[in-house]
Image 1 (cartoon, rainbow, N blue to C red):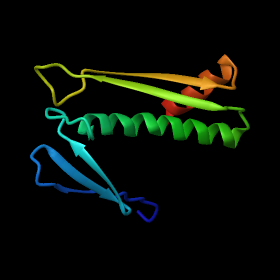
Image 2 (cartoon, rainbow, N blue to C red):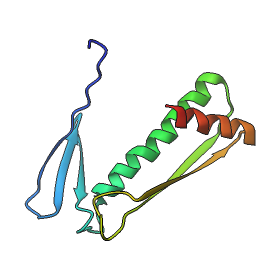
Image 3 (cartoon, rainbow, N blue to C red):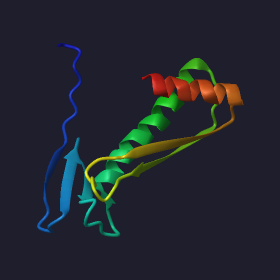
Length: 117
């Protein structure tokens, strides 16, 4: 598989139970356990959701640019719901896309491109 792209993240303990340090390409972030969040770091669940929603932003922006669609701004809000019985699984995930500078039809087409990838 010569075309395989590998992304590597290393996570390690910080000395504080419930907090990990993650590093990729020289960048570092702190992540807290979703069951023990602190006010100064994302939780693991929030970081996962941020990865999904930021993918939506960057993919749609890039596709709009590549196809000449005049997108001026995009915001994606994602909500993940978990039950107390299964806190380690998302029972529901909802994404809301807000696009500016495009028609309703263009916005729907851009969001559909994201869904299709």
